Length: 50
Image (cartoon, rainbow, N blue to C red; front, top):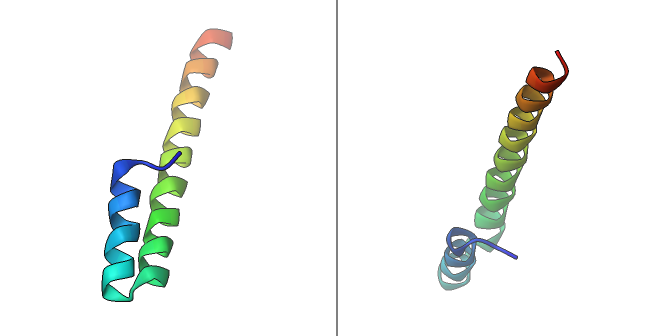
């Protein structure tokens, strides 16, 4: 379910005691991914319908 990058971030957070910060960064990463995917779909759909 998680990318390798996020799994590595979680592991690093456990080792360094910065889990909260790294989970926040992981959440930001996924939010950016979703925003990007939505924009791509919006562009594809607008080209199809207009």
